[in-house]
Length: 151
Image 1: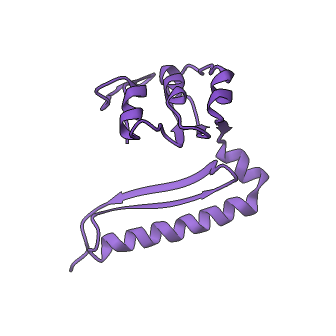
Image 2: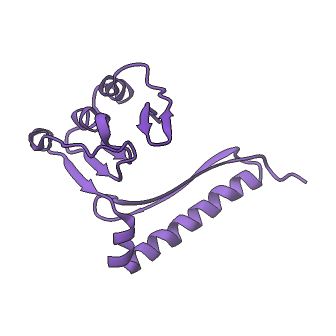
């Protein structure tokens, strides 16, 4: 997971990227670029992230925690055959309640399975995940860690 410094009204968040974002993404993906960019932050890193995306990649616009709403050059989507997908879970749940319920049910089962692996001692960290939508726009993710309950 890449973290970066983000200026937010609550202060600065630390960065773990020792080089420019685009270079870091290319290095992590062996030059290919990420297939999916999940961006809840926006701001100054949106364009470098989109420029690094792989051919036919998907850029998921989730929010703008950094404050500024970025403006991406549309020619990049054309040159990369890429998609820019808005992810608005509240509206998805309202417009597609059955799909949302199915995603939540699947996610809760996976989260339960992940938690049981911690509980039985077969794992210390686990991930539960479910997604829905034609471009995986709606995601439910839970990362857990803990000690086993061995008595």
